[in-house]
Image (cartoon, rainbow, N blue to C red; front, side):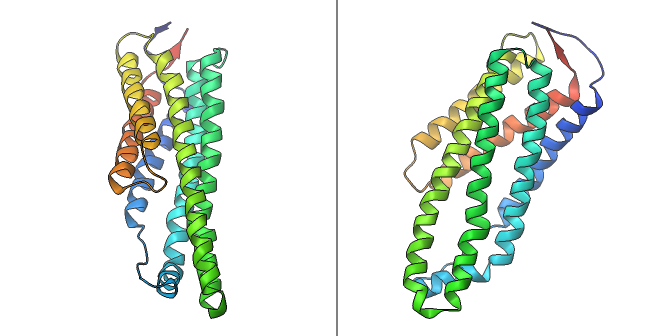
Length: 224
């Protein structure tokens, strides 16, 4: 495989911009997210209900970002060569990971706040709603972990292809390899509920890979 210098096509530039924009915007909005606090079930649910609008905004942006990643990485896979089994397999796995992430985002940003809002209007449901929110949290953690692992595997597949190319592309491939390994190690080594340090590790690893992939799409095409 070899690389040639050329001006990126318009779809490639759009894909690069989409990935970079989604990475920056989603990172900023994730920083806005917070928990409601509280000690008793009623206080916890009231805190979540009070943040319903913020949760909807933050997670709505997150869903849009996942869609942008799907578009961007489909373009990257096309650039790398969809005729290559490793590239195509990486795209399929990555997109399934995106579906898992959307599922986790819907639960965290919409389902849990709506359960809390409903319980706040019906005090006899508080205990049930509190337990339901707890187990919905377990489900969203599992979905998020699955999404991160699958996205990392997709990035790993593309990185293996990039490692066979000379120069800049090989450096991007090495970064993708390290990023994917870090994500998998952190997620698989975490408890059911990930610590803040583990979560930050995953987010930083993904941020570096996403920005590197965006630069690659903006820089020049890859041909066989």
